[in-house]
Image (cartoon, rainbow, N blue to C red; front, side, top):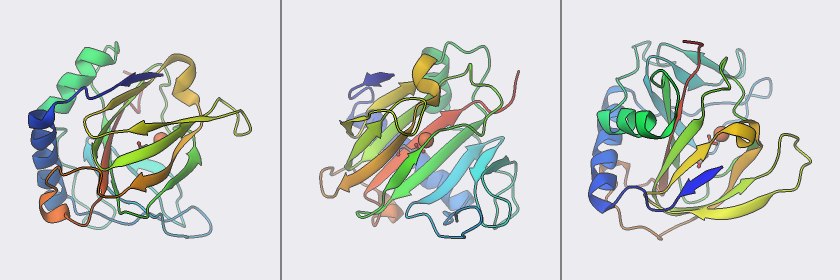
Length: 201
Ligand code: SIN
Ligand code: FE2
């Protein structure tokens, strides 16, 4: 795993936040639900890119080309994120999905692996905006030991090599730790952007 502390400076974080607001205005946030149980996630989500990650009770975790509520194609991935991917990924093709997770002050994300993609040779690259989060990462098995670290606004995390399929999650948000303007998402404590390649080139 590579943790690039404060990779994006304040000016770039503002540009990223504006790009998120534009995506959300075209592809509204939705609340995904767990496969089978239908239990709602505590984060809200949307996506940009040719494919977006969604989940619901009946069809489970998947990627699809259309927003689950509006039926519209997802907006394009912002240029600043395409540039991040081409600089950092070492992968001979663009990302297809950018999942946008919006955490309220009490939201969490349970330990999981990103394993709905067909090409694990591509890394997962994520960007943190807004309040600091306590991130936990372990190994390829759920029972492997874990360690945790803070992800701060502007940080970039690269999961590649052995860490690509490591279990990870968000234990908690530290509300009020960032003054980055969130615009109409002012109820949002933290925003995470996750770039992924889904299909083989
Ligand atoms: C995720 O694993 O999908 C999100 C991780 C994060 O919010 O940093
Ligand atoms: Fe993940």
